[in-house]
Image 1 (cartoon, one colour):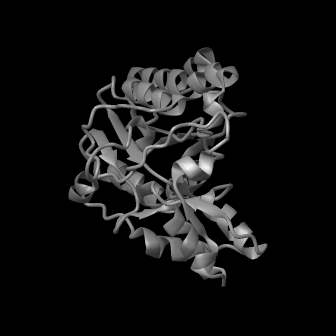
Image 2 (image 1 turned 90 degrees about the vertical axis):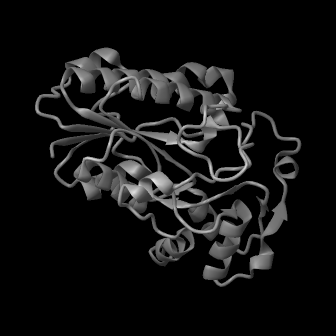
Length: 281
């Protein structure tokens, strides 16, 4: 399998490099995927699969009109460039999506075929990027939530607060499942290696959903603090008085039936969180 990873320096990109050790790993310095000419000029000869882990993920910063062009360039235009290159050179495209393409009002786990209804600028950009990826036949669109890996993320932030004796307020009305970048990359490798049917797959941690406050409480207890040191607040309370805030979907729980039927069983998120925390210094 001749693979190319773009966005190789991010949380998922680093995990994909471990899952696809023979892949050509390209960070932005090596290939600016927002540059159509640069993507066309890259040598895609013999490439079987393009793994796109490049994305603008700063959801609040995306609300700033000054960042509008940059958000679209990474989350929409770059996907179109990569999809075009993949189609022209006979490669498949793996593209990462987000539950932010939905408004969070769905009752129960969200299926792959629910029409997009984004609340935020970031969510709209991801939905439009998804449309670019799914416009070609040979694609795996992988939708995920609450990713933690190497680099800055919610779990590392909570661990740092716990270690410094700080007691944070954390939202308790957004529900979902944590996903480790390691598990996400393994699921992607499974789809590619098994030649799973092209299409959209939800891929998150498994198990009973929880809230961000539940995640924070587990981090705190793992670091020797009390779960009660995490103050549980609503999303409205947390963001009261703050500007340039992206609306959040309250339901981020994705239906995992399709990925499970394809032969991959995601890790239970609480178990995966314990493993992840055991690796933090």
